[in-house]
Length: 405
Image 1 (spheres, rainbow, N blue to C red):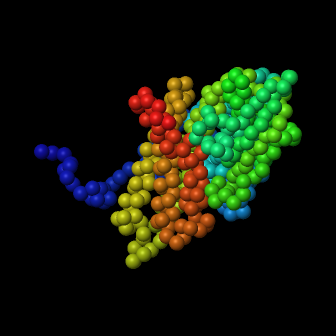
Image 2 (image 1 turned 45 degrees about the vertical axis):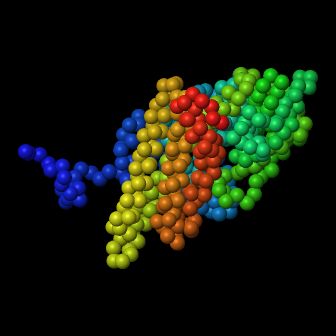
């Protein structure tokens, strides 16, 4: 019977004429599924990362400093509040925002975190739940980077149970008085304003607290070994008086902060792909150049299997996030779908970074190579915005209809 022998040795295909070699970082040609604007966004952010982030990020990571000089450049590209409409924001679609996160995290999780917090956790709630006066007052200046925001939800006694919030807000005449503490708050030491969530008589409310308000302090958290190029701190509120005009009027209850987290988690599903791609790219180059026992390390079967597994995981994550983005752009994405992608993609990226670090051998613990930096960062990324267990249980609840929290 004619035709190719299905049992033929696949290694023989190496001697046959083939089409152009696949992109090792995009084996399924996911980029071909992007629209023209989406590709332009990815290319412009990739250039920024290559030219401005990568040359400085190692130094900032080692010195535990945030590259604040990049904020203006991020803003100039329209990356702050990029998916919001009006008020000086770019109005890009969800897939474009995902690609922004992917390229930024290819540089460093800390840079993507800054943009995620500014866009999804601060600008989004003001845009979605704020008054028109609040939108006009804050969003244009946040889009240009003139104002930096932070998001006050997580508390010292436990971040995975936001309903057990201790921070409270009480009416006093025409004002609100806030007391409480928030912990592990990205951008808080450098923020000009904080979107703080607190328990009021009618439920959880959001408040815009401006820098300089009496009783509002934001000390930096020192001695981190993850997200060292990100600025992380606490928020302490002691009899902080906030005018009624600074309360977000459009939402009451946990829906407010949780909807913000859904936006940020969506971006994370894309961002960690960039970190994993950076790790794979480095070990691909390294194993081609490193010669052991008379041949390149890449010629070793065990190494090829590990590299193939990295590519498999990255490809799966790419397709997962792309479909999630299309669902989001259609307005039919639900939080449990975000949980599935956040769980899968963060685990993927952390595993890829750790294995890449191992393949590099002794060199893998040096900051001269990116996997150790990405691996350390991803230890935080897999934890914040909902731990892996929280997302597993969210998917489990979707499957069974039973809340096991």
